[in-house]
Image (tube, rainbow, N blue to C red; front, top):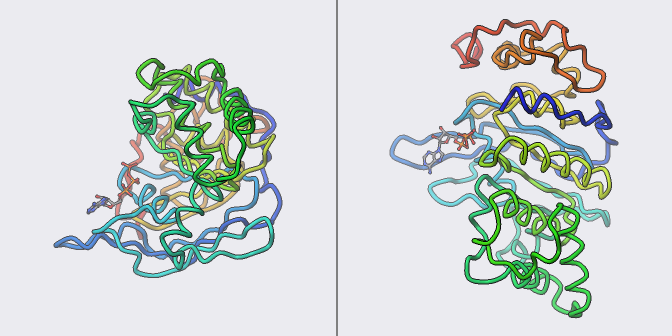
Length: 317
Ligand SMILES: Nc1ncnc2c1ncn2[C@@H]1O[C@H](COP(=O)(O)OP(=O)(O)OP(=O)(O)O)[C@@H](O)[C@H]1O
């Protein structure tokens, strides 16, 4: 995927955070899987997501990215338990919401409306026995019960168009759509209520590279237009460097570095980040250029291409 994602030439993504207005603050979050030998999957993680920014979350498999994302949306299930910390959503209207204190009913209202999530394989989450139209309508009416039929239709057509799906597909069932289309429908669903945050966990990994690139372009463009914040999770660091404003690097449950994409690329401080950068040949200039606007394809990322990016004891020190 690396070689192709480096072709994604989005050139309007700001290298600095889009404003300093926070939309989400995660403070000292620790998540433990209470199994026989408990696993602390997220360790004292703190981060602030700014309104309208794309924050990339990178790190090798098993470092805790998904656990962190699920916890932020309170989607974690036992044996996962939040052992410490706080998650605060800063609503556009000025109210602060203590996410960990939300009752079930409040939580259902919060999800999709304020914060939505698209996860890997989400395309398989579409209901196979109802049409796209019915699924969009049900989500909309569950959150905005008074919405008129005309408005439901208008909004459903609008979100599909935004993600590049012909509104005539409203009458389709999931099995009548390609994987890329189904994933786009899930992204449409996630933006239906105009949330202020979208968490995307490997949203395009199951798709072929051309479709991935199209969808990513769409996400960046939609963010530019609609100004929601995105937490984008992937193993694919070159891709994150292209689409993110800032990137958080996780190692063994800890956020070891959080910086602007440009700064991280040019001057990563943590040895593990440098190793991650070095594990993608396309970033070291040896296999074609890295073309994120304003980034020097031959800048020395301070690493070689020989390592596979696996952390060592030294990284963890
Ligand atoms: N249900 C579970 N029970 C016990 N341990 C778990 C459970 N789910 C995840 N873990 C452990 O928690 C740690 C973090 O897993 P997580 O899935 O959050 O990582 P990740 O960075 O998202 O990985 P990937 O990129 O492969 O999805 C891993 O050590 C994993 O083995």
